[in-house]
Structure formats: structure tokens, C-alpha cells
Length: 340
Image 1 (tube, rainbow, N blue to C red):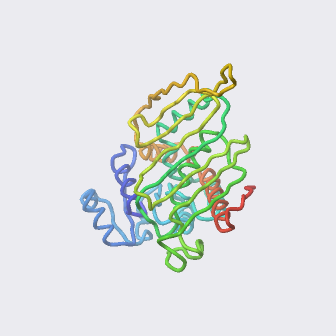
Image 2 (image 1 turned 45 degrees about the vertical axis):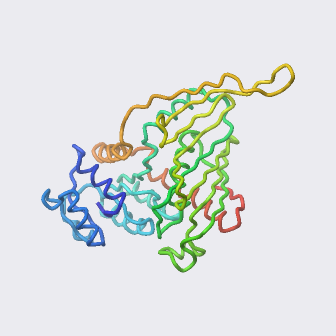
Image 3 (image 1 turned 135 degrees about the horizontal axis):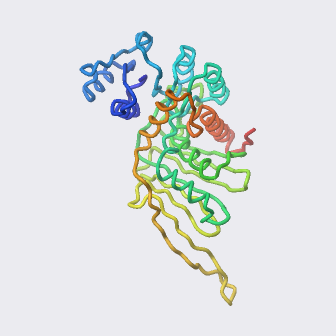
């Protein structure tokens, strides 16, 4: 396990609890983080090696490496792990450039090793069930989608709010619509970390946007808009797809997180449009921790040699390309960018 930060802790817990996985080592450059994770999980007592340099762990009989470091470190670490023959599970995004993301996926195929990306929401029971509802055609003809992902923190210093947050909703829209955007448009604003104050100035020369708006245009004509912010105390985790016969809503903070609201507009005798047949329905969803499912697929893939289509490096590279296009649009004043 490389990286013992906030998300690394969640991954460590899942591997420790998994009947088919054994954690051999945890690596983090920050000694205090290592001490904290050791104390939390009692790692040394369980025989888990702790190191500030992952090269010190390479004599261990490990088959896989999990990378949960800042995105700016991903390319070098993942490449080295694949070249050394490890299967890799990496935190999103795969990299910060589509060219390097594609190169890593090609390297994984050449090495005949897994490269899975932790797009956790694609394994969320609500997202899986929502995809089934859409395939059943219960929304009628699809029209558009919208999402909001806001909170007060965590504020990162390696990527902006767009790169940190948008990938979740883009992945869900792509999965639900079974399409990949052909055009994107983005705008954003910077308040906290302006030029010269970030850890990745070469990638975000103007600073890190604290709020962003993303527009996705799909081949079918469906469009989706996403509002993203890490400086907003109004916490929202809501995504919806609208059709001419209803709307499917995934709201993580609601008592019923997946809801189908069927209804439509019809004209009365006077020609006035009136709502009709409005019927909200809470969709039953099986329980399950999404991150546990991510780890299930990774460990299963190591045993069987079969990659998971939902979390493959190919999917990761596609999502990086969308974010790359959105960033380009932000830099160019919101110009509509063609993805090709």
C-alpha cells in the first residue's frame, strides 16, 4: 500500500478485513502518517512492514500494489510498479494527462498485469441499480442530466476542485448513459490557491479552482451539467437523469438515495400544459460498501487474470481525457472543446 492519507486509510482497512487479501507493507513519505496508521490498525503487531520508501519493500512476496498518493505522483509510481511485474490498483485520476494515462494502460497490457482505477462510484449499489432502471426504459426518451457535488473541504494542493470531484459524476453519467462525451465545456473560479501557491503549478498555472461548472455533450444529444465546489458548507451529493417520462435521482444524503419520479406534461383542452401521473418511487437497493467491491474485483482479477471493464485503465484514460478537455475549456474562457 503506497499512501497512508485519508483515502489510503480506507483502502488499508478494506484489505486488512478482506479474506482473500494480505497486507504486507504500508509506505508513506510522511513519518507521522505512518505512525498514525500503525497506531490505528496495529500494523506492526500484525507483521505489516512500514517504510517511507517503497523500494525497501520490493523483496516482499507481493503480487499487487495499491497507489493512493497525490495524482502528480501517479505516473512514475504506477509505471515502476508495472515494470516490476506488480498488478496495480490506483486512486483516481489515473494521471493528469491523457497521453500518459494511455501509455500506462498500454504498458499494463504489455506486461499482462492489471491496471485498475478506483472509480468507487461505479461499484456503488445505487449506481448499479440505477443503470438497470435506465436500461428498462422507465424514463422514456432521455433528455438531460445534472449533478451537484459540494462540501466545505477537503481542499487539495495538487489538483483543483474540477479534477478532484468531477470524475465521480462524469463516470456515473457515462455508465448510466452508456456513452462517452464528444464535447465538453468548463468554467471555474479561484479564491484560495492562486498562481504560485500550488504543488502543481506547471499543470494549473493560474492556480487551483475552488468551484467549477462542467458541461458534457453526448453523441445521443443528451447533455449533463455538474456543479463542483470544495468551499461550500451546503453539502450536496446529488445526480439525476431526466427523460420525457420521469427523472431518476441518486442522492447520497437522502433517506432513500435512489428515487424514480415518474411523471410528464400533457395538454388539457385549453392547450395548457399540466403535470400528470407524477409518482415518486423509492428504488430498493441491496446493501454493500462500494470500496469493498473495488477491492473484491482487484483481488479477484489477480487470481483470475481478468480485468474489470468498469475499473480498467482504459476507462481511467477516457475519464482523464474528459477532465483534460474541461481544463482546457476553463483556461480558454469556457470554449466548447471537441474530444477526439
